Image 1 (cartoon, rainbow, N blue to C red):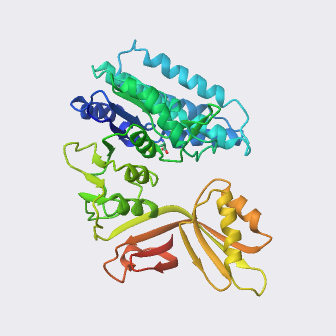
Image 2: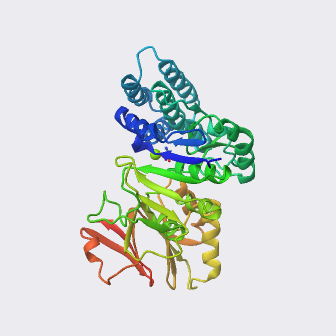
Image 3: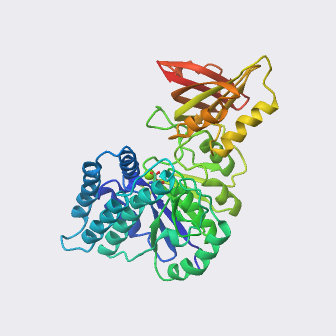
Length: 422
Ligand code: ASP
Ligand code: MG
């Protein structure tokens, strides 16, 4: 029997009606039973849902934002379906549920849980539209709620996978459906043991594809993107980029660690562990080979530039005449761990520790509050972390015109700059 294949389509590949039609064209000769289609929210829907939550928290009116979001999906559906199609009442229903949910007061204490329940609508609606459209044009597929098989803990917004349970769910409940039909499902969302909706972290749909692949012993995963594959820099930010035809799991994972946004950082590990190849292909040129990520066994030495935006530099200075020792670093890391903040860059001096972390709502405030009795803390927001992997030269000043460099660090294999627009 042929092995399961996973296709993942991100927000850009379903951002409007013609994108959905293009997705269907890609599937026309490729769709078969034993295939899972993982779909993200359409276009910038997740950001729009985050905005609704933000407005609701400030007790501001959400009706115009919510109408805009509904109309966006409605216009897409008008283009894809006949006027009497059931998708229109389903859409009404989704937005009714969403509005009902947003009537509840949202506070700092329940924010994460509400966040997951609210943003999940992006994926639920998008996957429903895609499945209905595929069926409409004769590509029969079935819709499945990912929360029925992606089992997580209750860390809302950053839920951890219960691999054993997820595998069991997939093998027991999903496999038998896949034996008969292709399945369309959502990326990014799961459910905790109480059945409450969770999410896996922003851009987590790639990770969903990898989770399903390992849990179903799939043959491959293909992520369809608006770029030709994995490039040695983001083509939206840099010129003259080069495509990697092949990449070792390890090198790809390293690139995502430093911030390459082409694949979600958590995607590679489960695939590498089970030896499942990952293809990154262009939905604009579906026939082109793209990039194959697998156990290549060697590094590709092309210099690679990775940019992480929305970074915060936090500097912790000792309050007396002591020097920085393990103990202080330990104290800081303990707090970072408690707040689930990852350090993207670290530099220590005799009397201070500087770290770079992602900008995250409330987290900086919590970090500062928890450590302000032990250190003098300063921070700068709105920074960028630029990393060059496999640098082929010493001088990278051409990469930073118009930027002030706050910190710099280099090793044999990487050069990093923390920078701010002048
Ligand atoms: N829709 C979610 C997000 O925008 C998940 C994803 O796109 O992978 O973060
Ligand atoms: Mg997205």
